[in-house]
Image (cartoon, rainbow, N blue to C red):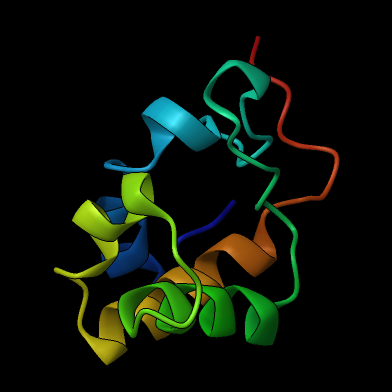
Length: 92
């Protein structure tokens, strides 16, 4: 995926902390009970992250990460993740 905007460049750096559970391509990892987030709709990702940060959606594993995210970080991540192909990126 081309990182052709400052927003996507910032999000690429932020997403590195998510890879352990959600995989590099956003496909998720069943062993971690982490869902596929790559290719999800931008508004949905943003809402879920904000709900977790604000305590509307409780997820203790995610809380450690989302509590540190600014609204700009959340918007950047949502934009970035929405651009990942839903089927994931095949690594060779």
